[in-house]
Length: 235
Image 1 (spheres, rainbow, N blue to C red):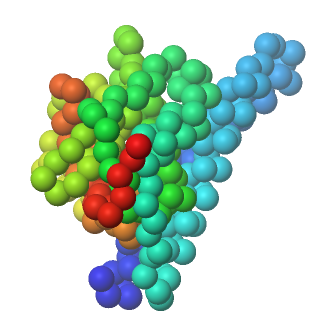
Image 2 (cartoon, rainbow, N blue to C red; image 1 turned 180 degrees about the horizontal axis):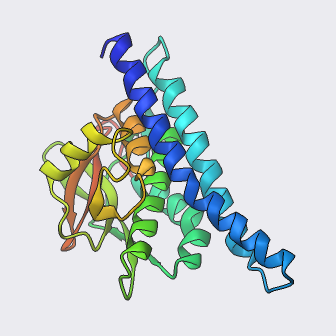
């Protein structure tokens, strides 16, 4: 990717992030207004949406830092299950606010994969938040977020999955071209800009080639394929 392309990608990602941040800021503003009127205010909700907004900003900054780094990203052996468990814990509060159940679904035991822990966790959290928010917007009766992993010929596929049967590879590729240019580049994910998805894609691209549409346990989602460390095995 040329310097010009990197600049354009960063600009489009920043525009998508700015659009995305409107929703949590609106929620916070509305709750403050309720507090001024002496009405009951759900401070837990304010805390949760503010926390996710800050996370998106931090993840965007991390993606830009890694994208502009001169040296290669230092990868390390990681346990997929421990990463997904950490992500589930991190998303627990915001999932509760949106009445969304979080499930871990690991198809077997795996050798450690090669990755950058900070980037991997940040990307998966951003991705999970987008899925939770999208299902809440679509009015799904029993929203659920599945953090799953399974083996493929290329490595270990780890991703987030939900009730998005309409999601296709062509749709996602088109959305990657439109993010930052269109307000709703991925309509299947609701009215938001889905910035968390594109931030996650940018982070994954620094270590594993980016996101792709995936199927897991009869659910549709977005995932990354991580290369296993064949020199180590889990006990």
